[in-house]
Length: 471
Image 1 (cartoon, one colour):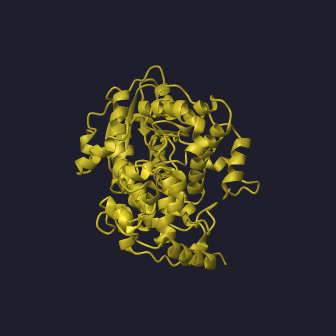
Image 2 (tube, helix red, strand yellow):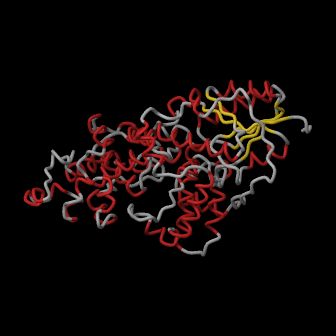
Image 3 (cartoon, helix red, strand yellow):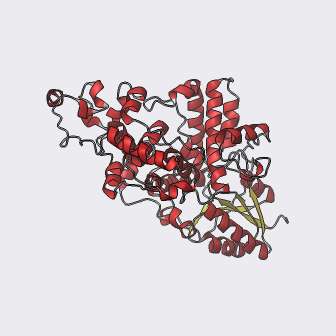
């Protein structure tokens, strides 16, 4: 490419400078315009949720700072904006890192054709996954549907790429007609909720790298067992950073593999691979977010009501570990993974609400809302997905909380109205004698809800229905 030709670097889910192959290509080509386009028009039903927009607002601000204020922002239909931008700026090439959501694949294919027809070079790269989905197939060239053989094939194949450093010199240009961050309109009107969300997170590339370093120093050595305990700091909390591409999985894995070999390191590697497997499933089965992976669930009689769903969303089910999880989600935009499984099992199997309803709520309230992981995980718990939990696996929220929140620290953090109860009654306050409740000034139905359903009866109903489905 002639040195007097400028290019465009299209940032998407790769809001970082370190280990960014598209950035490296743009820098090598000479001067370039770094741009970000908020494309709700093409996203349709999967336009970014409110919590993710709060995160994105801060992440774009941090990226712009890293680029010395040269990031150009736009919102609208990227199929129209990007070709028009290339023409107006005289760009001879456009670079981006690939995305794998079905709507993005279709959109990007159209954009590439339009740009190529206008004699604009388009080059895309893998900046988000350890392995490309089309590179890992069974011997008959069909995709895997079970995680273990998939991961085994990944590890036996090509090693993930080594992360590439930040280019030494970045010559970025700014479009004077671009929008300001405020013009992007990402922040909702609930300022108190936004401030509350911000208080729980540091956002951006530097924050992501710090979170990884902190996890390696303080959490990795007990990860395999500790990751199940929501009150412990034994998880990485990297999921939103990975989703927005503030850190790459290659960078994370490279740092993890530098640590001493052992079960904790291996288990974290497998969890990264579960993220990969979700993207793999979404790529090969693009209807995953909307349709049952196992068609036999198409006729399943989801018996839950909208009232049940609303009660669950508000964290007012009367089941403490479930309510704690749902309140953590609302307050922080995050929920511990063990608790995610508990609340999802409760919604789908105890309340009989369709998994899509839960997935939609998570989509709007999670800062790490990821179409691949969210869809695959909800279907896994519901039993309708690939490599799904057996139909008889119904998480008992009382048993789970006693096992993984032994001192009820997690529950009391988010359901403080139960904190004065003796610990043995916090898990299931409906089992506490009236005199015990009265002694701490607690009345069920007034200060904390009665259980929305009988755990035993709803479990038996679900087991019967699932058993009939299994045949």
